[in-house]
Image (cartoon, rainbow, N blue to C red; front, side, top):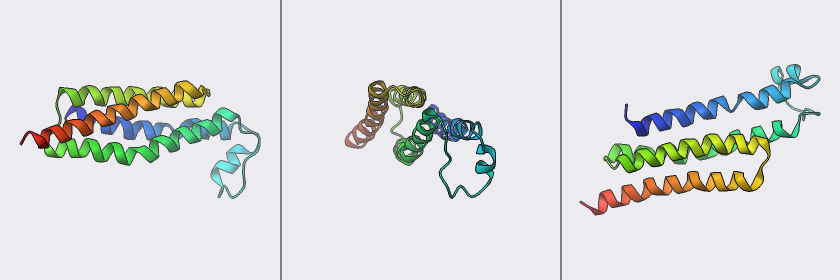
Length: 136
């Protein structure tokens, strides 16, 4: 498996792992375990603010995962991957791990900066795809 596909797999695994902090936050409040196993038709009271941020951190990554898979997949399928995309993928993965940590910790400006680094890494992939096709 290529480094770029490892990045996709790692991002998918990170998305799955980010389901755990919200479950822990919700399960730790009175009635939380029952709430986790029921239909969740009501809002669970008493969840710490970091638990709500953990939900949003997971949702943010889950919402961006399709774009990451699409762009990295196009680069892989078309042969536009290189050492540059490998570095961009590593930067993206590190940025997304840091984004989750900083988001859950509640550090707003750093959260945005780390997110921007990840998005820049995706633009590097797009650039490499364009250059690959323009070079033909």
